[in-house]
Length: 423
Image (cartoon, rainbow, N blue to C red; front, top):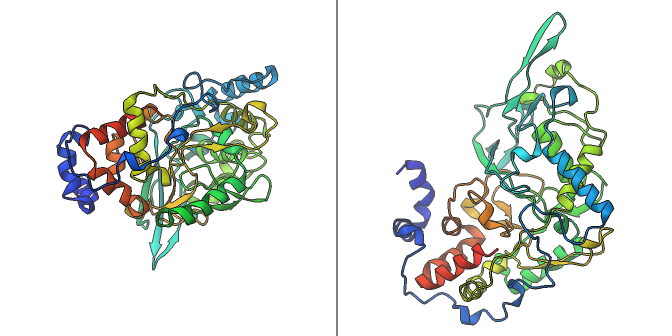
């Protein structure tokens, strides 16, 4: 066992160490009953699949109820999603991948488990993203040699600079159902934050108020690990620039490789790379991509739903939300089950140390749980290989739920895991 692993789990020892060696808690028989029991959970109807809740027919399918024009937009977006960008189309000069589906194709719209690196420097409690050295996001690919005058210039991939003392990895997130998330009114999330402050103040979430680049309006962020983007269109444009190096009207400026803007004079396509059409098509694909279908609602799943409520998981992983009016009928005034409040929570040592906007290094957006079984790894950096391990790494505002989980009987843990697998 590595020293790094022991360092990570030390705060949870000895309970976590014992749990990991007893078949990762999946078959642990613990008769301690000091945690809340499922009998105290109350009404679980919001957690159960229902005919009024929007779900997909399969992972990667479009929303049901699209009209012909909307279906055509989804298909055009799917084509854009799978198309690889070329250097003569603006790829790079530094980038992470050359197509959206490289990171989001297991299944279509999911996550392949691709990890990216962020870095910065913390000094006297202040975080510096080291933008002058290419931070905080590493672009780990480059377009290589390009013509330059009578010779060539070679663009190279970025690396973490030596002066950085904060580094973390970020898992690419699934895209399922994001049109529904986009259509939730800001006021709904603000009201949810107020309700959490009143009903569960110890685990209350904070809305991440951000300026949306596309509109200039201050909105509630909801996309990304730090809820750093407020709208799906801006989320798409940001991905085009930072993941593929493709500039667009909302993001017209190239990233300076490793912070060196002087070498952009060798950029093969210095003009605007995308007139906005590609970004819009990608946003359309995400907007009309259906949420994951729910699994069978068995007796074990129902028991697990009660445990989920009783031990405090639902305090942050809000079971259902409802959209507002939308020009797309399939998104308008619809209830869906993301199992997230899309708010920031202080996760203690589970935070990634990166500051983005008003989100501190310890704050992370509540990860949606829908489609959980389609993911190869869990948590923001992929450190958890099972849902059980993800629970056991919870810290900060999630620490009490972790402790409650450890106090459950083995059958209760199994029920909770069955419930999570049904999402």
